[in-house]
Amino acid sequence: MTLELRCRCGKVRGTVDVRRAYARATCYCGDCQAYARHLGTSGVMDAHGGTDIVAMNPDAVTFTAGEEHISGLCLQEGGPLRWYAGCCRTPLGNTPRDGKVAYVGIVSTCLPDKVAVDAACGPPGRIVLNAGSALDDVRSTPLAMATGGLRIAAGILMAKLRGQVPSLFFDAGGQPHRTAHPLGPQERASARLESA
Figure 1 (tube, rainbow, N blue to C red):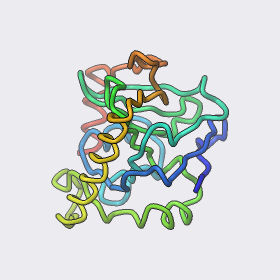
Figure 2: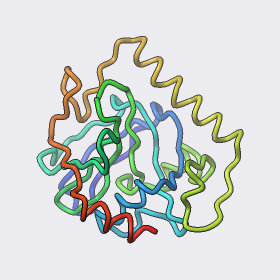
Figure 3: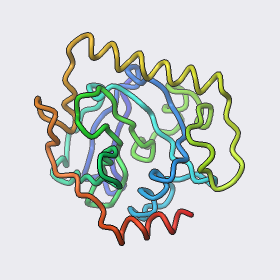
Figure 4: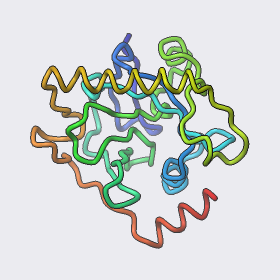
């Protein structure tokens, strides 16, 4: 099943093959909260400070328009790269830093057909990551979390065994196609302070 991917203003467009999704999770980590606050885009976090992410193989995502508007940033040295549409600051996804791991966490904000996402990937909130950083009490189910973690690990391992080199945001050598700018100390402190 292929779903539309697009930023809020429509300049960045693409498709996502959700059959290649590893799992759907809601992440409450301080970095996801700071990222959402830094972008200033409403609707990225839920009421508890969680970001809904569909973890998948990068080969399942294709950009069809507006790649020149894609920007990246990192919140801390050595941390994941966070990609967004610079035209309207819509978050797109998170990737490991080196580009050698077949993983992208697509932020569901850029998947406009929520009914289709729910049908294909299950409802949000079943798999909870970093619940200790939530803005209030969030319950997690250890079995769902373990199952989701195993599905993600299995997908990454299978891609590695096939010799897949992720290419969504990276070249064949694992270097980003675009520069992912680090947030300055003041920007980082401000985004974290706002999310506290």
